[in-house]
Amino acid sequence: MLKDFKGSKDEDSSALKAEIRALRERLLAQQQLVRDQKLPVIVLVEGWAAAGKGSLINELISEIDPRFYNVVSPVVLPEKEERYPFLYQYARAIPENGKIMFYDSGWMEGAVRKFLRRDITKKQYKERVRSVNEFERQLRDGGYLILKLFLHIDQDEQRKRLNALRENYETEWRVTEDDLWQHREYKVFRETYDEFMEQTGKTVKWHILDGDKKRQAARDALRLLVEMIDKGLENGRYVGKPFSEKFPLLKMQKLSEVDLSPSLDDEEYRRELKKLQKRLGELHNTIYRKKIPVILCYEGWDAAGKGGNIRRIARPLDPRGFDVMPIASPEPHELNRQYLWRFWTRLPRSGHVCIFDRTWYGRVMVERLEGFCSEDDWKRAYNEMNEFERQLTDWGAVVIKFWIHIDQDTQLARFTDRQNTPEKQWKLTEEDWRNREKWPQYEEAIDEMLQKTSTENAPWYIIESNDKKYARIKTLKIVIKALEKACEGQL
Image: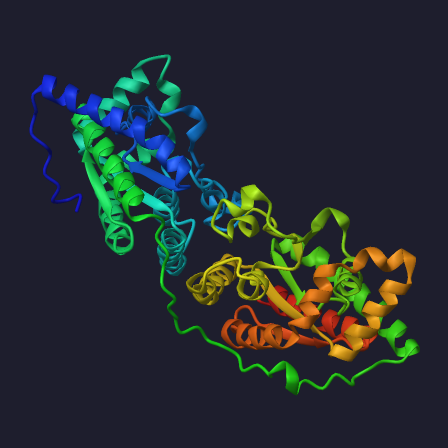
């Protein structure tokens, strides 16, 4: 790709200027249509240091209403300073429907520089390439328009530009040690960029622009953007079809087969609770020191006891090192983005614990059954969520998922108790009663969810919760065992 790239020929400047003006006018006309049709647009501008990425973005945004776009410049931190998953800073920046996001460098530069700097291994690099393909495909399948540009200059031209920047007092700050290192290792970078583009160009194509011809590069970028938006406006939002990758799945019981009779007496419960909470508190210190992120996911029937269970997990943890994330119906700004966005933005830093009270699995339960997404959307989500969790565990996170399970009679008794107890009435809603009427449909959906998303790296555990005391102790034991294993793996 880059090695064989042939620069463009000089063009008539008057004709070029007129063409750029016409393309800008088309883009100006498109922006309101993009907003009206709620099309989210991502423009990724990658390229060599000093190739003119910032100038190119300025050319693209010059006629767009500032209310309709944003520009982000993700930072490539050394791996030892990074506290979030690889894709975190890119995923959290995705635009709302009807807006355009420009990335001044992004996941390509983030992966390549860390690999060549030897911050990450070959295996980790391959995992990140796979994650990029998954990320781009998920965005595309969710209706995003994505344009990927690489601004190319040769080594001699890069040297001239870097020297010119360094010789000017006002611009010398723009040349970093990483830029100079890239120039010295130009051929190695070129080979790695080529490899990256070949491996990530199937779902969303890469376009190489000639950075030696700035005006022609601006024209080509404008043309590609305008044509992509025209196609999106004509065809409407793209909806990806369901597919399935072979993840290592664990065999799960159906809910109807689960024995809900296990229980604990009060004395045994108090003894076990004290011992296990003490151990969990010790492990919290260890995971903080070893920078192991922990993500605990709670789903379950209404009134199954999720809240009480979470409180027993949280009680021994240092409050500075954990968060509980209660997930309700998405807010408008969350509905206007790909559905995993609101979970990407809530992930913990390394060494911290995040407890999700409801999770991304709402996609294949309430959203599926209440018609809040299309059939293709929820069928595709099983694989997307397995990919998301694999990216988290590739990062080093411990991911554990709990289904807090009760039978219908127990739920009815707890609903009735809530209804008859003034201080508990706030816990019971009309929606709870409506969901109860759909118990068979929900049970079928939950069984399918458990079968398709309990992977070796992010397993589901069914927690028998007719006896809340038994459920709390079982959950604590599972968490402790997983954290001990993770800590031993880093010795």
